[in-house]
Length: 101
Image 1 (tube, helix red, strand yellow):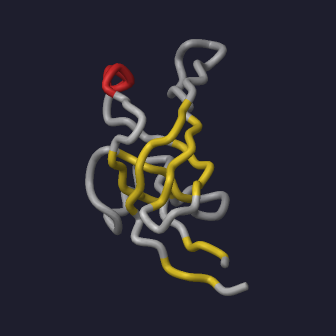
Image 2 (tube, rainbow, N blue to C red):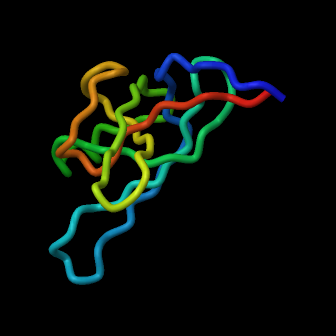
């Protein structure tokens, strides 16, 4: 097995919306993204506005960002916004990947 760099681009396959119990936290949006290179990645979505939920569509183009929590490791999330490589320290998510083959 070897690692191969991924482009950070993909298409939305499936998603769900998890509402916070107290109603005051951010929505969690777990998703499957088909990477441009072919593999599917279980990840999360980061939306600029909760109203964007109504505009999500299967096959929609997405790009990766990385979350950099101060108390744990960085992890990828996908967004409809800026292209790959545009890290957002304020975002709690971002997504990029390498694929094993």
